[in-house]
Image 1 (cartoon, rainbow, N blue to C red):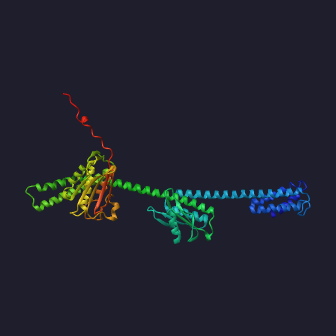
Image 2 (image 1 turned 135 degrees about the vertical axis):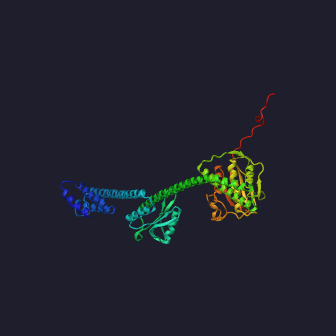
Length: 489
């Protein structure tokens, strides 16, 4: 109103040198100023007030709303329309400029937090940066949940009511985020979304339960996405570091095992030979001494087998073993394994069931025999002396399955997932001799053959170990004419 009133004396000063139609521009300037300074509503008011003041001050008869000349009606109408349009456009440009400036500030602020998050090395640093950012721009502390390496969601910043914590857990588990929480009025929960998974949740309550604007929601959602990406980067850094430490530890352990087992192999072989030759000495040993020498020989052979497992395991994992693949009949490998374990597993305790006309299998007979021997020895150690052991072999589609099944107590439920890991035993602190490498060696050999080994409880009780080997395409047998060529007389 003051701008429009100020336009009257300015137009009065210019009236002697300008015509009446040109004075309209002075009032249009007042409308533009109102729109630029105050916005759309005041611009509309200034347009109407300018038409009214111009009519009163400069259109004859003056100081009256009546119009003596009908041509001024058109001038006043055009003045009103132009004033409204110019006011709207000017106010729109002002709003756009304000929005652009606000977006520029938001982008600059997000760039700042992005740069800080890019330099963060720990989860605590990420939490501190996020808390400072939210406090600086929204004036309220955030509540942050983040996942650890085990995937568990834990609260790292702020305090949360039970309802808000449940909502955060639901959002972190993959439910839609950026929605209000009924139990906490004015609260928003956003997922910390990484590229591969949700890494946590960010919750924020509006001061005084004021409703959040769409821009605030979008800004917070972008901030949560940046934090999620940073957490995912830190997660994979931790995974890579843990994997590197594990690989290096495994390499050092394999080197140590290889060195120790290699140095023990020769003394143990000598000990086995000496203990077996004791009963042949003169004068003859007493029955008690013979029994003691036999026990020494059995213990030495068992220790030698453990050392062999250690050395073979180290060689397999280092890639130093080259498998000698040949097309072999499965029944011969099974027969050699049963014969090799005759001392600890009598023949009457072993039942062999091999399907007729099994095709040849491409395998390393020595290493596959080691697999079956370890399984038979494992059955002999962990089953009662009277338990029956069954070895089966049959075709299963394009593979051959070999099964070693016993009627013992079965597999321990609490340790079933660790059976094929190195140095894993069926029972912790067990009195049964062994170092827990037999099944790990079995898995390494079977996987080197492109097969798979698994363990489960047998339907009738006991344990069941299954080995599945691919058949492949055996070579064609040569014809008789090609085997023995004709000889001319």
